[in-house]
Length: 402
Image (tube, rainbow, N blue to C red):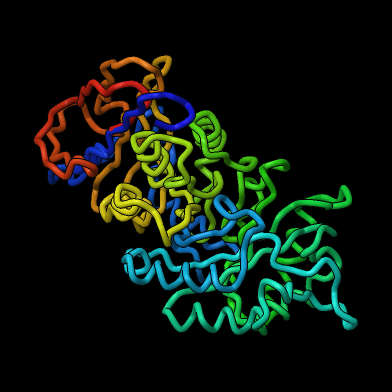
């Protein structure tokens, strides 16, 4: 039991799918649109993203691992190497978790005599380039952290120099934080680094960690590949659910090339129950959030690995249509979340956020289908198929989702 003491429940269906996922709507059926699913003009959605930052990546949300949630500043090169080894050996890499991202505390507090960032010799004696080479040798990609301010490692007023340094180290991903920013507009600071990365000679995924303070969802698509819509997540139910809600209101701004980011996954860190973590992973997958593992993958238990390795749930997150699922119905603590997928399908999550068992109903009109549709539904967590007409009703226990 996690610290919340709650019994969570989530159903993920695909129609033709029930996370639940309504997956595979019968031939001739289509999404009529509903009050809950507004962003479903797929032709318009696709063409609108031609104006995004043109670095040719992030066609689907990023997947990988980040050091911060579990290790904070207790990091060194051996940890990163062992993590890369574990991601290959336990099968996570093969499922698409490709980025191994080094977060804060890797750098010395001062630059060298030429103004370059320097790795902490005590923790990274071989240097960052050698570490990146090791990660690349495993078939993975290497990410690093910097800051759009003066807090070290901070790149404010050193954007061009640091971008070239990252490129010389063969960095693939930059998480760019917002500490010590001197009160300068985030849009100005993040745009500077965006341009510097484009001029660095290397394609680098640009993750804006601006905490949602200046509504980066409204301008991030011209600057980066993902943007934080929330403050930092913590490993508890209230933090996770509030991040989901904050992120949800920006759903219309996400799509191929640029994604809303409600922060990294806490799955496996111990503060929530397995069922609560299943809710966490389901909503992040449906919302097309980055799937960046935040636990110790070297020693995680079998239930954590099984949860993070659900290929069908991952496929929802990585669906090529790239439309963020959203909350479409709410009755106090009982919620329906849904989003369209390619192949004329829709993913649906039934989420009981209360403490007591209760019926949750998703009518087809709630998720963009005609009430007369008969659909093939698949439960992505329990891996079974059903044939359903007009609605789905299930009775999850408290604090859980289907």
